[in-house]
Image (tube, rainbow, N blue to C red; front, side, top):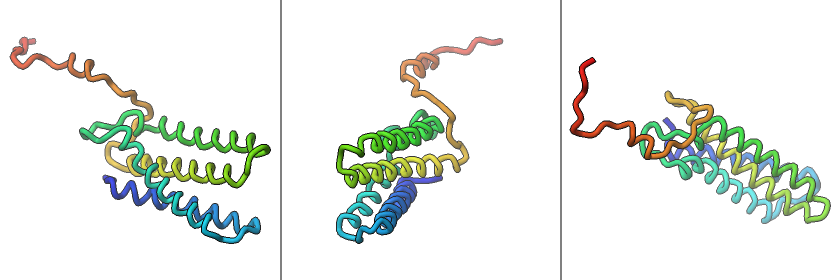
Length: 156
């Protein structure tokens, strides 16, 4: 079972890959490697770590059956859709704004998204797996199903 450190390590790895890819892509476009690109790689690693922990921050593991919406395939699909929408909106705005700053926003969004996806990938490998879609149940519902402590069972 993946723990906090494993989620953080995989998220950092995903962020590092995104950051290095961005730096290599920039050097192929004639940009020299400089402090700004080095900072972007470090920021991608940090953002990847955040992404790797995000599901557990939003939905803490208080019991073994804690996996609801933020630990589901549906959340993974929403993450991918969000990354795609950020990329499309950046391209539509890029004509009027500094494209280098928008490229950095896209890179950090990708690092966060891939960090989230690594978390879901690791959790999918466990015995319990991931639900396709599971909503967060209210506490009232769970409590109403419990019998009072002094109640006797009726014979069938």
